[in-house]
Image (tube, rainbow over the protein chains, first blue to last red):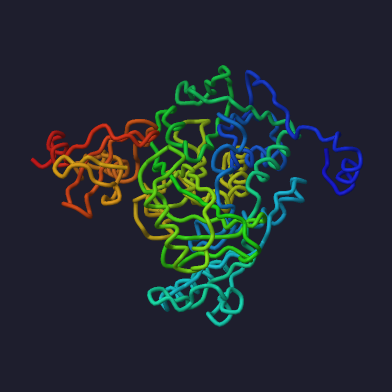
Length: 416
Length: 96
């Protein structure tokens, strides 16, 4: 079913009785060419590009719960490509380009809104660092724009420019950055993959990975054994658990990241704003709620909830740049499990086991990467070689010394 | 979370800094071994990441600056045992 204005009018005038479920609920077949473990944003995006761009349709996506029940349903929906290092930035710019065409490509309203992202700077040294980052962004073809305090005072007059400790001196804009409707991204990809023959199987937990003579031959699931010549892990926060099924240890720890939403306010925040001296990022949803987040809780956990000290820390970050949010009430907070890697950058790679592939280590930046992650993973699965923008996202980069550490924080996952 | 410090009694987790998987105690001893690069890469970068009981290092930064080995369930945050890291390291043959 193709969505269009005509279709909307027709359904509206006939009582909306013609809408159909947007994907099938098939039973698993005994064998597929490719099994993707994990029906979140990245897994569904991988299935979509495998079927659409690379013509591989004998594919199954296995999801433990329901579609989009993990981090794709619990993030702060920011899209951007404002990285520094050459191992990352071209990849994220590729992703932003895919975002820009996503709705036309999938024929699904993902509410991609390029409302801009602004990283505030508070010292001269930080301004210099942002100028450098802006130049690195240009090199990949991305846009960047430096704004001084005078400009920001006009655009965002309620920021606390004259804070004694962290005065706001300006910011680095990426006007093409913004937000997207996170669930709809998963649903759009699921619908596109399903319509091309991919089996999306929900409530099907992988309980074992079958390896014979060093080659992966399939998986055990709660709905029986399924054979496949290629098995692709794509489970974000659960990477450690699933990789352990294949006897692998990973350069990853799982941490909880909390996010928050306030009561609905009138439109006040045109884009995404981030604090430069603490960890705080905020945008306003189309329903009016301020959506924001900050630091990890900082310890290994698979519980999708955090503790109060971090709630206080995040809110303090918010109060430091926009004191008016102290008048808004917090409606909800929640947590998601982040696959924090040792250098803060992700992996899209083969494993040492033939036929077993790994996608993970997205830290708390996985949402913006959803299109490129799927595209590059599909490229790797279909052609057995990495996509040109993902050649450095290797599992062995710690051994070879080619780490991609944006922050220079070292091998301490809770600092990235 | 409350960490029951063996010397100081129950302390709030926010007084502590978290380092991670207790495997970091077992630093490879022979840096000249044929497989020392592999061993040090595994030591430096690979971590156990279980869903369930996890042994991990916490540092009492805002307190007596001792290192602790805490056994904590990563699904429930329940802490089942707290030991001095010094004792754990010695029992594993470190510090000889």
